[in-house]
Structures are given as C-alpha cells and as structure tokens.
Amino acid sequence: MNILYIAQDNADIDEHPGPGLSVSAVSEENLFNRLQERPDALIVGGDTERQTEERIKGIRRNPRLCLTPIFLKTALPAYFDSVHDGIFTTYPDLVQKAEEINGRVRDMNHKDMMESQDYTLLAFLYSRNADLLPYKSPLSPQVYLFPLVEALGDPPQEIFRWITGLVERGLLAPERLVDRIRLCQKCEWSHLNYVDICPACQSLNILRVPFIHCFTCGHVAPQDKFLTEGSMQCPNCRTKLRHIGSDYDRPMENYSCLECSQSFVDPQIIAHCAHCDWKNNPEDLIQQVITTFRLTAKGKYSAKLGGIDDIYALLDNLNYVNPRHFMVMLDWLLLLCKRYPEDSFSIIGISIKNAIELTAGLGKHKVSTLVDTFARRLRELIRTTDITTRTSEHNLWLVLPKTSSAGCAVLAKKIMTLQDMTKQEDGSMLELKSITFTAPEDSNNAETAELLIARLTVFMEE
Ligand SMILES: [Zn+2]
Ligand SMILES: [Zn+2]
Ligand SMILES: [Zn+2]
Image 1 (cartoon, rainbow, N blue to C red):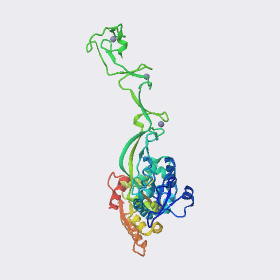
Image 2: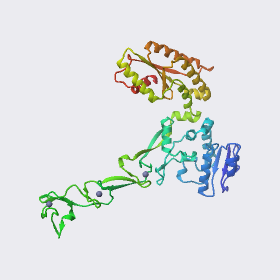
Image 3: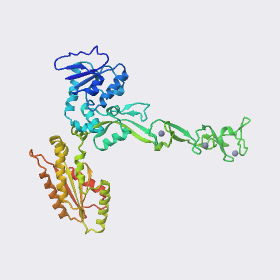
Image 4: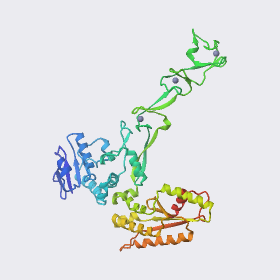
C-alpha cells in the first residue's frame, strides 16, 4: 500500500512501518500537479488548522484524489467529519480502513463519475458506505450545510434543490428527520424575527394595556382614559364607574396602537427577514425539512456503473411526447371513446425488467446498444399515428388510436418477440414485460388517464 503524507511536523511519522507499506512525504505542489500514481491513502496535517482544512478541500476537489482515504494528523472542527476518514492512529488501523474504501472504489466506473458532480457525490457515499449528513451552522443562510457537497466541488447555488433533484431521480432517499426550518419567502434565508404589529396600520408601536368597557354608553378605551382626578369616569358619557360587572367590565381588546389609536384583541404577527427586510406572513414562509440522505439501490448501481438514465433515453426516439402531454391526450381519447364507443383505441405498456442487472454484467456500452436495437425494431413496428411516452425510466407506453383488442394483441406479441433479438452469446437479454388495454371494453367509468396508467403500472410491475 502506497501512503503519502503531507504535514509540517513529520516527527511521529514512521517511514518504515512494515512490509507491504510504503510511506513517503509529498509536497503540496507534487500532490496536486505531478503525481503519477494515485496513492492508496493520505495522511494530512498542516502548520495551522486553516492550512489542513485547505489541503483537505483541495484533495476532495481534485478529480483524481477526491475518493482517496484521508487521515488527519490532528483533529479538525466537526464540520469536516464527513469529508475525511478519521484521525491517523496506527498503520494497521489506517490500512484496514483504507482497504475497505479502496475496495469499493475499485468496484466503480470512474469515467462517468468525473463527468458530473452528481456521480462524484454518489461515488463518495458509496465508497464510505455513508449517509449524506447535514451540519448545523447557525449563521449560515439556511442553518444547515452539507459539508461533503461543498467539499466535492463548486456547490450548486441551491444545494437543497440540487439534493431534491437527486431524490426525485431516485438516487438518494431521505433517511433520518433532523429538523424543520422556515425560510423567507423572498430570499430564502432563515434569519427571521417574529414581531407583533398593529393589524390596522402595521406599526410596530403597539402596547398591551388594560381596557374598560362602559355599560352606560358602550364606550371602549384604554383604562387610563377613564381615570380622572383619581376616580373612574367614562370619558364619553361622564358616568362615574363604581362596580365592575354592573357599571363596567374589561373587554377582550387589550392592545392599543400608539400610531393610529386602534385597539385590538390580537396583534398581527409577521416574520421580518433580517437579511432582505421582507415582511413575511408566517403562513407564506417556505418550509424546509432537514434530513440525512441515504443512497438508494439505484443510487448504488449508479455509483458503480455511472448514469443509466441515458440508456433509457434511447427509447424517447420513438414518437415520443412528454408524460404530461401524453396524459392530456389520453384523457381526451378516453372522453371521446365514452361518447363514441364504437371508436376503440388501445394501449400497450412495456417494462424493461433488467437493465440495471444487465449493465452490471455486460457494461453500459453493450446495454446501450441492446436498448438502441430494441428501440429501432420497435419503431419499425409502430405507426406514425401511435404515440409513446415514458412514465418512469423503464416503463414505456404506446397509445394506438383506432386499434381493437385483436390488433393490439398482435402488436404486443410482435414486441415481445423483440427481446429474443437482444439475446447475447452468454444467454443474457433484455427482459420485457407487457400489458395491454383496449377502450371501451377494459375501461372503468370515471377513470382518468393518470389513474388508468397507475393501475396498469401495478400489473406490469408485479
Ligand atoms: Zn396602528
Ligand atoms: Zn360611557
Ligand atoms: Zn429575506
């Protein structure tokens, strides 16, 4: 194992720790620019904490070194916990941890990973078998940071949105709930001050005071307006007030505005943004749930094999419309069919069951060719009036206007025979599953396009 160290104080680094281990010093310049071989592990220190931090950031941002195990000479602030791999203690300990990480790194497809920040993050999490953890930083705009995301590259402007994108693509999933924060509607900072203001003129200048309600004339005013020369008298009707309950009582109102003299029961509450000055209505604040994130099964495959989204995208070369338009069109066909039941149409759903497993076995390039071949043959089978869409990556839908169930069954059978054409020498091939539907006979009254496709998906994915 080839271990490099970059540290100012090398006193306790043993350069001859034992057989099979090579330990040598490296300069910053050589580490970042001249290294021929990727080291198996790095021991990092610095003159100052700041210098160590900068070195770690530099290593993680370097495409060749970003996955290399890093061990620290001395501890750093907790912010860096998810960015390095622990404090250097003994060589056997280092070797064990580094081997575990490097074993997983060897498992991965590196080319794809370097091409996108998405895959670098997935690869890092996979190599450490780690979750993506938020770190609480009270002064930061959104209170929580993701140090690993910041370390691995130029963080996207809106980290939360970027992570949400990875969740929507099924690569990451929220794991443990950490917190719920609220953000300014305008600038999305979390530094909010909740203040009570006058509901009439929005002034801050309000006061909580006791009020009096005169039974004789119904006048309501702050108590001090009723106090004249040491006795209680209504300032409106001049009645002397002696007994609470018979002459007067205390009404619900107990706030008074010193600007506009309005009295009111409850002040209005606003969330005043300390950053942009916007006065948010509390109901309009953006709610952000803070969780840890874990790689999904698909995220793990993607870390190992690179993105497989582009394989499925080959299916979009058919007469493709996006799912939203597809649903609108299908709704329209369903309505039409209700009115003119003699005008039938059909749907074929096709699910590719094993693209991920195939990619693991045959490699991405080979599987792309298979899916491409399949898509070409499929295009030869369908008519220009037939429409396709994909609702999830591997589920393809064909709508066949003016097609009876018999016609639909014939086409579905032809499509299923296409999987034999993708057969490889070792017997592996694309595994397809299909489902057919013909309106009006198979349609449920009142079923919308979305519900229909959801119902068919359940059958197809069984
Ligand atoms: Zn007011
Ligand atoms: Zn009165
Ligand atoms: Zn703001």
